[in-house]
Image 1 (cartoon, helix red, strand yellow):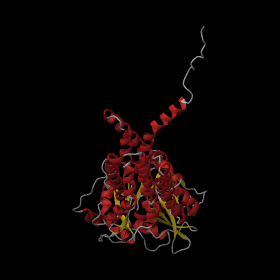
Image 2 (cartoon, one colour):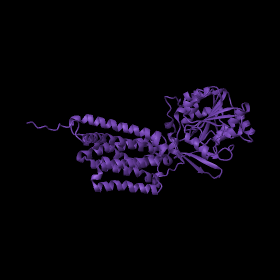
Image 3 (cartoon, rainbow, N blue to C red):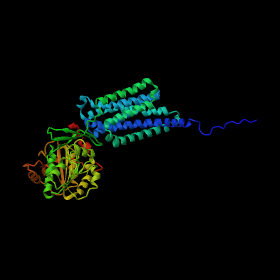
Image 4 (cartoon, rainbow, N blue to C red):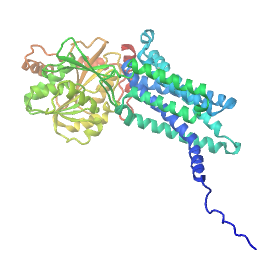
Length: 525
């Protein structure tokens, strides 16, 4: 007699897929941890420049300090994380480290708003390094501890060390790359720099709870969650999340302030007052002498070409473009302004009407110049330089040649340059470089003196034909001014200015503009 038995079930036991999925998720956890930690580090690095801009500006020194301090923090964090991991690596330790990273990242917001007065009074280089250290060294150090702890938790076989370390550091680097692009292309413009810091802190806190298994340790979990939450509530209540900017763009912290004239507003880009704009009277020029010089050069051109075609490299507050539009109704005006947010602010807050004849190109001047019609412009204005930030690629021989090609045979290129007259290196380098493109180069200022050595704004004029002081005087008189604001340097003073000094030839391959302006930057701040 035989007994029939039920056949064995075919396939996986019930619940196996779920256990397999859980194992797969746990396998991804270390990679996700180091990816997000590195993303957070680079998000903070990019956001640092925007947070520091209203305090110390954005310059070569600012970026050097940010990169150096955060790299120093990561380096120290890697060392400390390795030491601690060898002694007691655990998920609880990882959770505590991530919660501390959340806390110190969030602390950047109130700290940035309460920089001690004695720090502000320090020399500029020491000030930049110290403020950057106070805000970002500790969070970058703590975030640097994450990877060594995760690596230690994953090492179970000494024979697989290279594979484990290589994979985790590759994923960590990928997270850093992702953080750079996410912040620069999306977050700053989308939600602003301060909410971005809050987002980073929140993600790190969730990572601490989930990846650090803090729900298993009641006291640690309570402390890890309570501290960042309390600090976040403080930041929200004290309005530290509010940006000092009217608008944060990928280029500037844009602010607008009142002046002593109710009708005039100041456009501030980062720390620099870029323009004083009259809201009701576009023919009213601001208090900057170089703008009046530009207007007198424009009048000189308008005598022969009332329907002149003009191009501005740099828009800012659109003071001169609006002036030309109002004073010369037959003219055409084009502006290359790299930051679309600046253009939007000028339209919305600074009196530029939507139906203006001014045509704006929101892109880099080098790329737009390649697509503009050659031989079409009567005058090109360079208004993109200051003593804090100079786009070096707009100072070079190659760019000057691009501008010359855009001009008509008798066209003029005028550029405002901020530097010291006698000891400065950038002004003579720029004029020397212009001489390689234009047969006639001269300097103009509003002071009438060429012997001092203080910080000043000088207009460099390049043309294919000679322009004299009498030409500018006649232009001023046609505008109702007895005396010209423009004071052209004499040939003798021009030779004396260059005598015994080395003038660098600026090219796309060699344009050390930041180094040339460094003494001026350090002295004026």
